[in-house]
Length: 414
Image 1 (cartoon, one colour):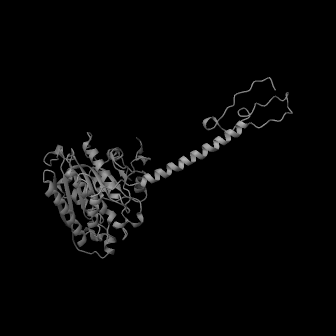
Image 2 (tube, rainbow, N blue to C red):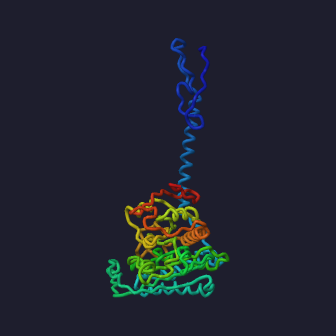
Image 3 (cartoon, rainbow, N blue to C red):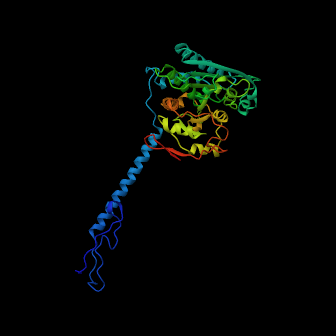
C-alpha cells in the first residue's frame, strides 16, 4: 500500500452518481515508482453508479411520457355536462342542445327560407325571455336591411342562390346590468360587453359548428344571465348577425352606415364566437388588445390557448369573421373558436352528430366566466383609437402563450 491517503470519490451525475473518473470512483492510481506491476481492480462503486444512473434515466423518461399523456388528455377533456333540470341560472348543455337541434336541422344560407326559419326561432326564444323577465332585465330588438351585395359571392352563385335581393336580419338581446348603459349619456356609452355569433350558414351543410353551436350557446347564456339572482355590473349585448358568410354584411350594417343600430355604441369589449372546424373544444385564437388577451388568461374557466393559432391566422390563412368589424371600430375583441376536425368545415358533415359532447358546456362556462370577470373588474377599458392595439398590420400581437397541465396559461410577456 502506498503511504498516500485516499482522495474522496467525486461524482458528477444525478444524486451524486455519474460516470466515475480515475480520481473519483476508482482508487487513485499509485505512482509509477511504487507497485507499478500491480493490476488495478475494478471498483464496485463504479458499477453501482452506472446502475443508479440507468434507473434514474428510465424513471425520468417514464415521468416525461406520463406528463405528455396527461397534458394531451387534459387538452381535450370536456367539463361535466349539466342536465336540463338544473336551475336556469346555471348553464346547461342539454338545454343549449335543444336550440342547436332547431338551428342545425338543414342548410340555412343567407337569403334562404331556412335561414329565415332560424332567425324566427332566435327571435321567438329571445321574446320568451323578455316575457318571463321583463324590460327591466332584458330587451330584444331586430334590425332589418335589404341588400343585394351577396350576389357577388362565388360560393352562392355556384350554389344557384341568385336572388336579386335579400333581407339581412340581425337579432340583438340586451341583458341589463346594474350600471345600465344610457345612449343619451356619452359617459355610459362603451360600457357594455358584446358577445357575437352569426346564424347564417353555407349552402353545403347544416352548419352545426359554423356557427350553430355558438348561437345555441348564446341563447342559453342569455337565459342564464336573465334569470340570475345577482345582476352583473355591466350590460351584456348578445348579437346574432346575419350574412356573415357572404362578406360580414350583418355585423358591418349593425355598426356602420345610416342604418347602424343604436346599440352598436354600447360595447367596448367584444367576444366573437366562430368556428373553423367541427367542434371540439373551443380555444382562444387571439385578441387585438392586451386587455382582451389578459381577460381570457385571467378569467376563462377552462382555458385552451396556443399562439400558433394567431401566427397561422396572420401568416397562412387570414381569419375573416365579424371580429374584423369590431376591431375596426375600436373594440377590444377576443376571438374564440374550434380548430380541430377542420376536415368537415363548410361541408355536409358539419352536422349535429359531429359536435363533441361537452363542447357547448365548455364554451358556455368559459364565456360566462370571462364575461363575469370583465363585468366585475374595475379597469373596464374605453374603445381604442386606430393603431392603439397590440397587433401589427398582419395581426400578430407579439404574445407567446400556451396552455399548461391543469388549465393554466403561460404567456410572454407575462
